[in-house]
Image (cartoon, rainbow, N blue to C red; front, side, top):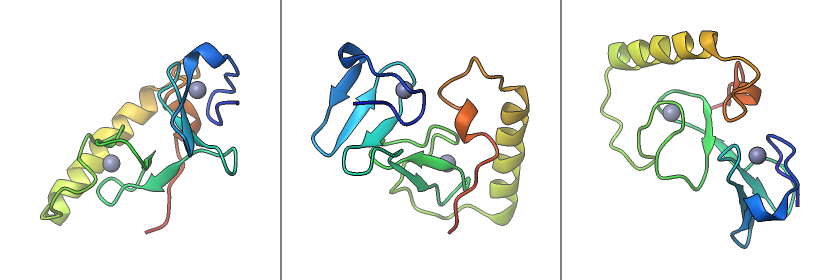
Length: 105
Ligand SMILES: [Zn+2]
Ligand SMILES: [Zn+2]
């Protein structure tokens, strides 16, 4: 087992969830089948988010939330997250690798 995000291989901090394992160091899930990050594109902020997590790690919106946000609200959200991204440095292992990555809708 190896975390696809931070490279952690310590079994004590990698939690077996069946089809995925959860890294308690960086809070990312890795797919057992592929050894890759278990991520999907967030429909709200367009960042890559944990497929199994109830809330997006970037915008904090639940995956099954009603998408009744206006264009302006989503733009404001994007600007807020961009400011956060600008402040990220490599010590922030939870977000660092996902910085500047965008998924397709
Ligand atoms: Zn990790
Ligand atoms: Zn999001």
